[in-house]
Length: 130
Image (cartoon, rainbow, N blue to C red; front, side):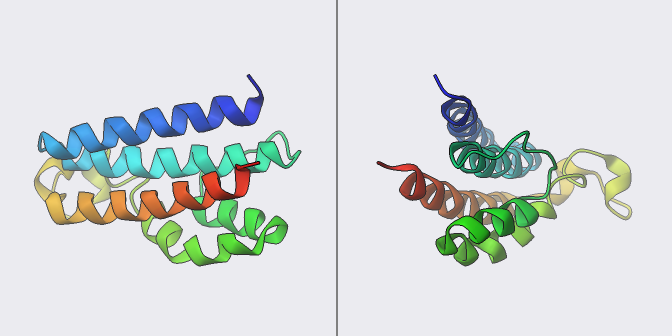
């Protein structure tokens, strides 16, 4: 298994875990896992294109790097901007003013995150297909 395949396999597993968390009401976890899955999927594409080591956590910056190699990735930049906003406040009580992640994130936010993620994964899979 190549490095790119390893990263994509974990990205898809994280996507499945995000869906399960959403379906069971753990929306903050679903949102965080959506960001993580997108990050790993974008890294998979960059590894497939010979980049490495691929570092960083910003899906937007990773999408911009990917877009420099394949222009289609420019279309997921807005989704990545939204996903990047889920990296810290979904996990820490001090990431939100006067709220905790469990009480703040709801089904509509996790649905949006998963929709954004689906767009990123579709772009990656299309770009990585033979």
